[in-house]
Image (tube, rainbow, N blue to C red; front, side, top):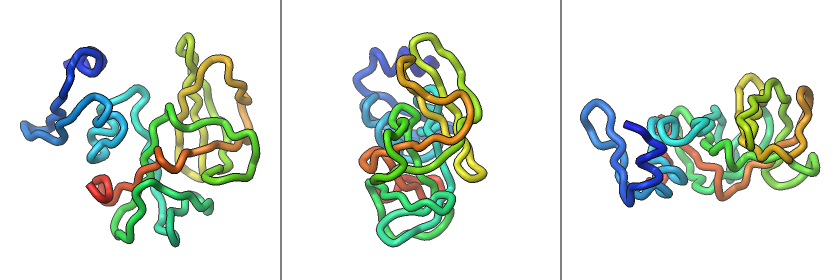
Length: 161
């Protein structure tokens, strides 16, 4: 059960949990739009970020900062914003659509990439960056979360799926 090998060679994958199929699809479908947080954590390294949010008019609120999501709907329950570390980037400006303030708390060197751990309020968020991207080793940073890659989950399930 090697997810990297399966993602590389398979045309279609089944993700199972407790003997039940959780999601079936192409490697791209499972990576881009995991049906629930189980698949989001299982596929990818590092795993997908899942951050607790509150519903906001037309979007979500993360630690007092408004964000838009690709699949917003009026839903209730435990809401989380899901975004892959590969899609979080350092913003060139402190202002702009889906730009949030964060604090860099750690960097893991992985050869040609680095995994940067940031604190947003009381939650951790990771981003996976190419080595050549400048990022402070500690301190404040602005992050960009593309709307089309920011997904809303309610009670662990992708909204609208």
